[in-house]
Length: 155
Image (tube, rainbow, N blue to C red):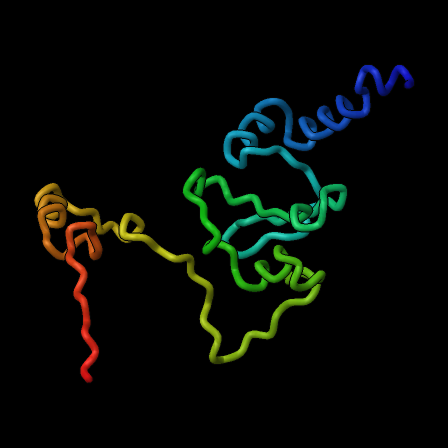
């Protein structure tokens, strides 16, 4: 066993390479907070929403491609913010990025839009509406208090 292996110099070198690739300690900490992991890789392209796509083949196959969402999204990101053409590349359906091989735009195709929730649409419930839903007999749809209906076959 060599001194490099004992001290783990290769691991420390990779760690400092990642810190440098993230833009220093502040960038490293921010990326760690937002993504729960810190990776650096080859920049593959950017979509019209500001999502940046990266690839690093030193990671195993399904984890070697990832997306970094733009600053304004912060922690409010989800998979519906990724357009279909980048989804294909991200999930290894194709090896060519939309930058290398742009998809044909057909007249029946719609532009990509993320899935909006009630909060995104600004449809927040008031306290009175929340109380109505809580007292409602309709919600929840299924509960443990309902009786089973036994059906007898007709002979």
